[in-house]
Length: 82
Picture 1 (cartoon, rainbow, N blue to C red):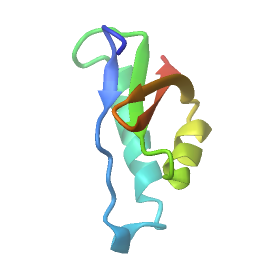
Picture 2: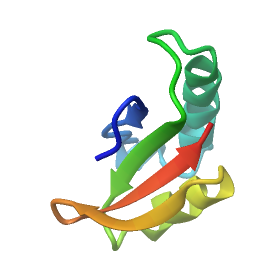
Picture 3: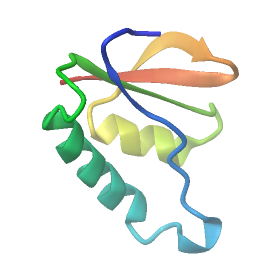
Picture 4: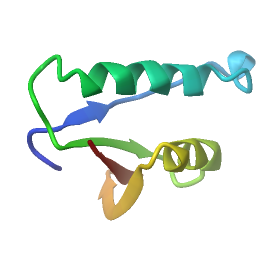
């Protein structure tokens, strides 16, 4: 994985709350926090998601995350350049 970065790890919204924009609201808040560099400067944010989770993939792509071709276990890795 990439060193000197931030990671969005295990963003999960309970099924009964999905489709209400909570994922978007959470990512908005997280990205605002990360851009303030609370734990030091970094150049990238990375995350991973299961290949079949197309809703997560589409959401992350809208934010500018790009798949790297790497896998973290069985999950696709995507990176956002700060």
